[in-house]
Length: 242
Image (cartoon, rainbow, N blue to C red; front, side, top):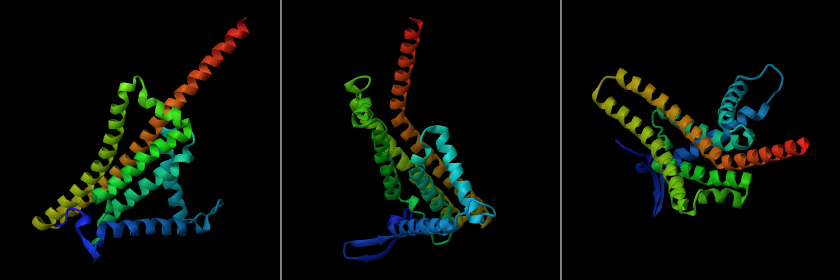
């Protein structure tokens, strides 16, 4: 029994190795690109809409609404990144039910790569909103002595993202494989359905945590703007009183 698709070697030539993680990651990316291209090739704004377009609009609208609940401003700016993360993880876990398919999210290297994308995306969005000085200033607040703790916090939450997703996907696949070898068919089927549910929940949690991390990077700038607006309004009121 293979605990990780990293250990499944598909092809090897000298030091170049193609394992199941790389292969199925490529297949997932190609499938998402081709699927999106197929669904959007004939988009229409007037009924009747195709079933594929209806499904796509429901998925995109749901993701957008979830992001808007956390980040109220410029939702469409963050939708492509967060939506892509969710769809990749969700479809990877969903296709884990297909015999012979090894979800790339069952590999720590894949989940670490996804978490690394989030690690770099958070400061990128923060700098775009606040500027370099404005963003990195919060690492020194309320005291410069807090800098190491802020850095450790950034690294630890990235590690937590990777390990949480990997652990849940890998453990679910392992439990199903063990049950298939020792008990009749119906129990593993129930466990597979439970694994499917957990996989979708993990995709949702990963996307929500990513949104929360981005929102926290923008929060300082928004609070600064609110305080400036409040001081400005108080100044105007004082002048009007005079």
